Image (cartoon, helix red, strand yellow):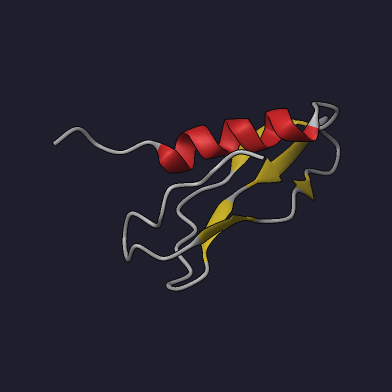
Length: 69
């Protein structure tokens, strides 16, 4: 399983939300949310028939990305 960094807003633990199918498409909407503050900054469309680990890796890349200091 892909590891998620802590929430960039409060430092809380993050988790993968259940994928939601986009009706009429071949895509699922996936997101990560913070358990502490509820931050859920965006969703990412992933190919419906992709391997679940590929889906997690895709959304984790967005969540784990941080601005350079």
